[in-house]
Structure formats: structure tokens, C-alpha cells
Length: 334
Figure 1: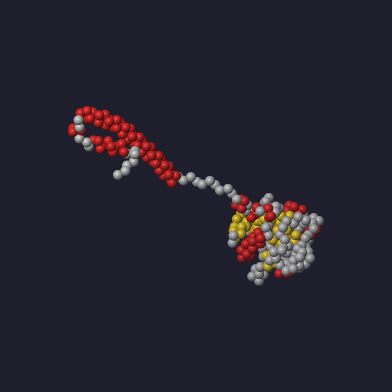
Figure 2: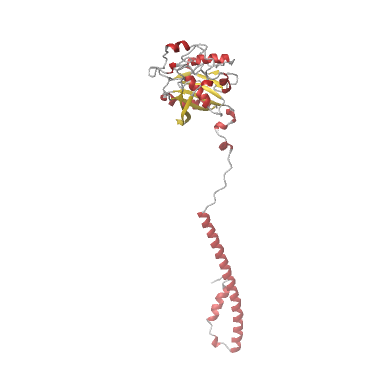
């Protein structure tokens, strides 16, 4: 049997102890004892060397096992991955969207079925056109008659410093033609729902439905008149304000879809408009309001609600308007 050279001295030492030294002559016994002593010392040294090496090996193995066990219990987190441009750059931060942001101001009262259609439709439409925007639903919650113009004034006041232009937008009018421009109206007010495209109103001075203005131009007009309680006529008065402010009005060109450019989702048979005119109101409805507008607007924001409708965000601003019944008594109906 072959042995390792490191273990051989130990085996020899055991073999010598099995010999019967009583049968060996004295002189040979002394020589044998001297040789055995030398071998014993040499073997003892080798045993110490082997034991030391084994102890060192076992110690290192124990430390490595302990370190591995520690790493399993408390694994070190991997270094953070370097952010990619795609993860840092969201869609609305894309420079191709331009520097401007639109406040879609929607005067509103109790047309919830239309709102559920309008918000996701417009959010998708404007995103596809890369228009930065936020949708503001100005919900009238007081007991007065509906006042579209005053609610748009509230939308201007509450639109925040992060927007620089407005869309005065009816909740029941949806753009179907993607060629319609909702970009920043730098040169002047842009009437998106122009008379030759709107499905209902076709007279030349019509500026209702959807009208884009920069905040600067809206302020130049002092906003809209607050005298128009009930439905209609407020946009006709605003047309006169645009002329008085010497602002050039622009309308779409090159749109070939005609009266099918927009979808009008209001059902007048199911929800009638408040078109009643009392005597005093009939005399006032075609007059120009030379002083009223943003300067005499009075309202209270009762609450704000951030909502998401089918994935589209919007802000509901519940608003209470104030009415001076000495000047506009038709804000109430008996």
C-alpha cells in the first residue's frame, strides 16, 4: 500500500513500537535506540507540520463558509442601473411637444353622461397631437341659472401658472378631424368650431363652441361678460370684445369634412336648454357690457376634485357664482 510522504513518518513510528527489543544484542540495541530517537524527533516534527497545515486549512474553510453564510443572509444589493434616456424622458417631456400648455376650460352643470365621453376623448385626441394640456371642469353648484361666460372666467382665474393658453370648450362638442389645430394661438384667437364646420351654428360672427386664446389676449378682452344668465348670447358679446381689443380672429383652413368635422353629443329632447328670457333680459341680451368681466367676477371655489375617467385625468372645480340681483335680476327664475 502506498502512503503520502507526509504520513509516512507517523506509520514508521508505530511499526517500531511493535518490535521486541529484548532479543536484540545490547550494542545493537543502543544503536537502534539512537536511530529511533532521531526518527522519533523527525517524525514528531513532521506531525506538528501536518497538524499545523490541517488546522490552517480548516480555519480558512470555516472563514469562507461563514462569509458565504453571511452573504446569503444579508445579500448586498446590486449597484443601481444607469438610467436610460427612455426612462428619464416621459411623453410630455418630449421636446417635440413644444413649450406651451393648454387649459381646456369646460363650463359644466349636471351633464355627467357627456362628461364621461368628453374627458377620455379629448385627452386621447390632444395626446395624439402632442398638445400639453389639463382639463378643467368648472362645475356650477349654486342655485342661480347657468352662466357659461362666468364659468369660463373662473377657469381662466383657476387655470394656474403652468398653462399659457385656453380652450373655451363646450362639453358636448367633440372634434373628429385630426387635422384641426389645437396649438398655441400666437397670432390671435383661433376659432376651432368655425361656422362652416359647426354642425348647428353657421352665422359669420359665431365664436362659440371651441375657441382658443392665449391668456394674454383673454386678459386684453377683460374676459367675458358676467351678465348672461341662462343659455346663449354670451359668445356674441365676446365677438365684440375681440374687435374692441383689435385682435385678429383666425379659423381653420383646408378642412374638407364640413359639418361632419365635429360630433355634437347633446340631446335637446332629453335635456332642454335654459333659453327663457324675462322682460328685462330681452332688453339687455344684445347690448355690449363695456366694464364687466374679469374685473367684476365674484365666485367661490367650494372644492376641487382630481378625477380619472377611463385613464384620462381631469380636475373638477365646484364653483359657486355670486349674482348682483340689482343689475341682473334674471339670474333667478321663479
